[in-house]
Length: 187
Ligand SMILES: [Ca+2]
Ligand SMILES: [Ca+2]
Ligand SMILES: [Ca+2]
Image 1: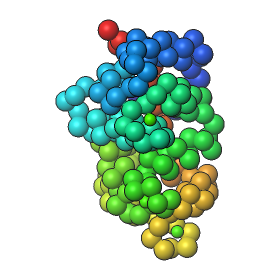
Image 2: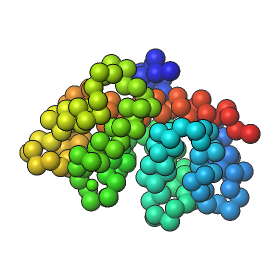
Image 3: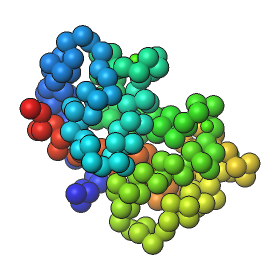
Image 4: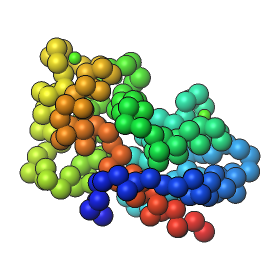
């Protein structure tokens, strides 16, 4: 897992189409609920971290906040994860971090996601760092005016300045691999 961070991550349209067909099958009503979303992506119910991660992803895709994904939200989501450009992905990550949706990230919000990602990815090269230390480091590097809040523009700039930060902030480390991997698990 995670050997290739390179850009062999293009998923072809046929695969996206396949996921859309899954959507139709999985929810003929046209609205996907969280538990169905989890089933599509094959999240094992035993893994608390993965559950939390997928829930956060789910909510970030639910643009009209009705707790279901309609077909358009679903397709937009797939496109973003699988084919989106860096800027779009960063904007999406920012939304995932920004739990209360006020357009700024505080330490709690950052730490919350880092903790999840840390557990799932084991952050190979940063194993010695705790989520708190990682969070401090991120603020050190990204919070330019030191007000304890990260704005979207600080986030975008910070990510592009430093590869370590980028890997943490863009949150799609191996997301494509994960989707492809789980894609085959449909019943
Ligand atoms: Ca929705
Ligand atoms: Ca916030
Ligand atoms: Ca700031």
